[in-house]
Length: 203
Image 1: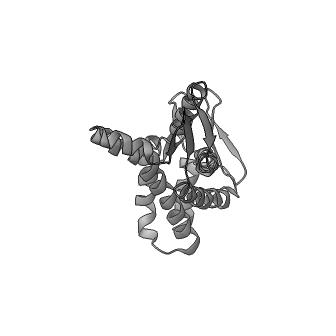
Image 2: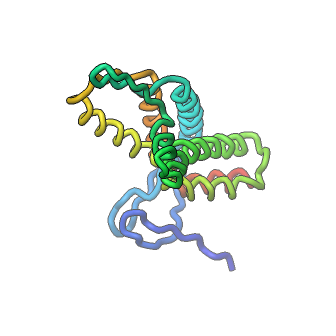
Image 3: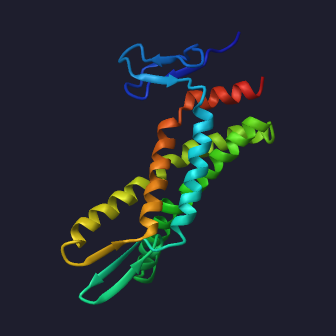
């Protein structure tokens, strides 16, 4: 006897049988009417485009200064890694490592794994790794603090602009575009659809 697959609502945790829907349809929770999944036929291509674009802009972010501070003639140039470097040399080594992992390493790994996952789906190369890649993506996504770091920068700018002259560098804008791409990827990540892609690839 074949065991029915189950799915839980992300909003109310109601457990129900996995909906049988066609491409383009949207499944709603039976209890709270919250959207469970939407099988978007173009989601995989848009996800790949945003992942590659995000990687490109994150690389560009590492090549320029994030911002320049001019405080009474004392000029300081800050880049993406300055926050981690400052913590490291102030004897907060563990915290510095965590900051570096959350704002750079994890986002890079997530985007690379998404690109590899989609490449495997489209070409059939490395089918054995698709499930592991997907589990790693879902495991790491809650820990990447891309948007939190950008919000922290903006809050700091609001406070610093009153006491210093601030010039935004190219890295600030490239990181902002990267952040937009990353947030867009979060909206496209649909667990049900991801697993359905794997099922279709193994048919």
